[in-house]
Image (cartoon, rainbow, N blue to C red; front, top):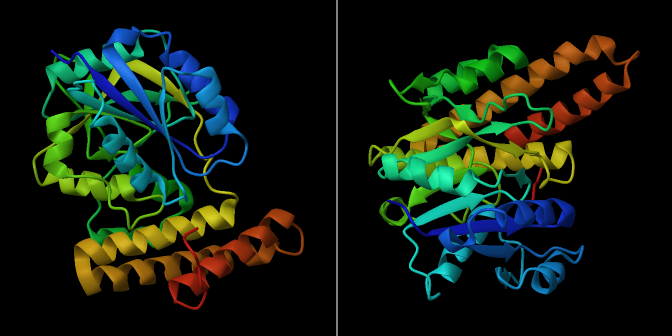
Length: 311
């Protein structure tokens, strides 16, 4: 039975979201978990307010923003020397809202499936389902996804989830890391997040490695949390460039030269098609003009003609 959980939260600004998340957590049975927050250089007073208002939270202020994966790894390192013998880990985004029984529910879930990663069902603020699960897409199929419409491509990437008979769980190829609970043994087996990935795809990379150990991602549809999402990147262009940069690294790492060629070609084809589809509406629509600028920049990046710094 899972009894003690180290909850790792990474912050970068957004104090109100962090405050709401911590308040929700502390309504859960406190003896079953401890909270470790790694701040990635917030400028809005987030670490100072945590230190002042939440003395029960262990806080680490990073000297620089090294990214989401590196901060989570630092959170685990922060938890290790504590006089707190945790048997499980919950990686939790600070833009989540939880019920007072969310932590016990996830601990119960993990007790049923200790060799897997358990994930709550994510909801949008309006209560609608947030599809946070994704397919395992081989490089060639991934390339042909560039020729689909945005809606069709999104459905293809999400894929299907498989119900676990007689339970409230569904198996996904992988999910985003907004809320992952796993045993300490599972974490040690797979290893930490790849710190070469600043943001986006650190969860894809970890899940890819987890599959080598037959570790599943199981979503419990009886346990739900609200996930706001999209709070880390400054704007659409920055977010898109960061995503494409991380994706390129992932395909280079796991598929070598073939992966680089397919990733760059996919991005170039996708962006050029988006530009062509938007051009007829440019004289009449500011949105179309913005889309052309965005995808032309991404097209240049795919060809290696647009420099991008991950930070």
